[in-house]
Structures are given as structure tokens and as C-alpha cells.
Image 1 (cartoon, rainbow, N blue to C red):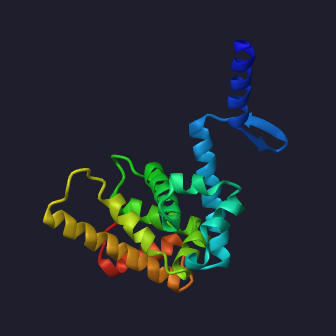
Image 2: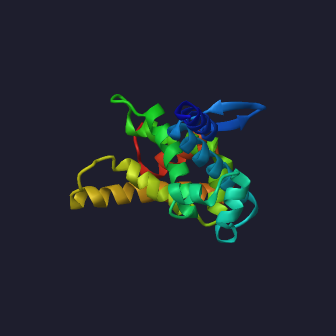
Length: 197
């Protein structure tokens, strides 16, 4: 009887860890399940945001479109905005990791940032149109400040000046339909600010 019970428990645990994918079941551990849930919630939110403002999107709509439970949403997020914050953080972090080395000049990094914005043009345009582009500003500021300890006053002022200036330049580029290429918008910034090559 004990063996039958253990077999049942083992079978149940395997079943709980499975997901359906293209007709086959895949066993996932907790980490994989969590990645799956957050990816599906993010994708659902991005799709819904194309059609509605964030305040018109309910948690139920997100979880229904993502095919996950409300508990999964609240286990991972405090609110709807956090979905977007994490997504922006992940794509900006990816940009930084791919482009920043010890030998990278700040100007080259700035040019690559404009290329990043162009690569995600549709997403950033939606953020801008939905009055949510401030999320990018906050992530950009945190990215520029990669220090763990508190900044001195002068570091904080300089970081705010640089990040808000770059943010403002990008926001205006979005507002005007991003007609310039990344190279052209970088050159315009360089010309106006006196940044040397």
C-alpha cells in the first residue's frame, strides 16, 4: 500500500510540473515554470497594450490571455506597471551587456542606445503613446548609475542631468516619428551638445 501511495505522489508531482507545448508534454521545475509564467504574462500585457491603455486592462484579461491563474500574477508582480518595468529592465540590461566593455567609449555606447531604441521601435512607440515612457527613463537612470552604494550629491546630479537629457532626446525622437536613423540622431546630438567623437 505504501508503494502505491509513493507511486501516486510521484505521478502527481510529475503531472503538476508538466506543460503542453505543440502537442507534447514537457516537465518543468519551479524555475522553468516561473519563467514560463512571467514570459506569458509579459507577452499578454504587450499584446493588450497595443489595443488598450494600461488603466483599461484588467488583471483578469492579462491572466486569461496568458493562460495562467491570477495567483501566478500576484506571485510575480505587485501591479500591471511592474510587468513593463521588468520588461524594459531586461531589454536595456541585454543592450548594456552586449555593448559595454572596459574599452567601450561612452559615445559608442550612446550610439548603440539609439540603435537599441530603433530595434524596439514598436514597443517604445507604444510606451510613448500610452504615456508610459517614463518607465524607460527610470530604467535608464538606474542603468547609468550601476553603483551599489549611494551616490554623492555631485554624482546624483550628474547622473540625473545625463539620463534625463538622453531620455528627453529619445522622447522627442519618438514624438516626431523617429524619422532619423540611429546614426543620424546620434550625429544631431553630437552636433548640438558638442560631444566629440
